[in-house]
Length: 292
Image: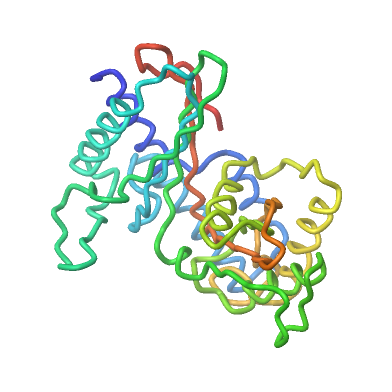
């Protein structure tokens, strides 16, 4: 239990303070794409300096350390209650050490007990597999970018969006347009076409586990991902809404089965502080490898 807790504290620390290399490379590439001397370039330069400073000082890359979402791939006989206990211990310890902000508030009383632990915090998703290895991935998702997520029901008459990929494209771009720089852009989209209202958002957030440079194996969705990013970056919204060529760093899209009566498009928005990390653990709970 102690080894597992310590490993999870280190996972939280690294997730909070160090932007994954694939995300950092996307930020650097976007910096090259901005015109010299513009506010957009200055905003991205500040973001890049912030990334370096957070890593050097091992301090949160953003003051809002966000929702804590664990994804656990584990063998069939894995002790899930023990993991939950260790994860809660780790979150409390990481909060004490300053890797996490005291960031969980009782919705009825408004009381913050300072532990960052409560119903729904942390959020832990278990998926069993037939292998013996244990993989734990963590996403820290800030409130600002969570606020600009959106869910659409097709058809949408206002946007002239029908139940097809073009209709999906229209509502996804509308979500980007409505954000208008809020949510600490440039952002990354996680999108689910289909599902129900709950599963659509769940699948959309799972898209954030993908690598920034990967390509969707489904040709139609791969084309849609590339088109969404290219089109959004021509809208002129830019970093933090200051204008420029970089409104999105990426878009990741999946499709889930749906009921014939429903056609939801669920869009989760991730800020530039795309805090996502993962580890493989041995049977004692010690870190073997880093996944990103």
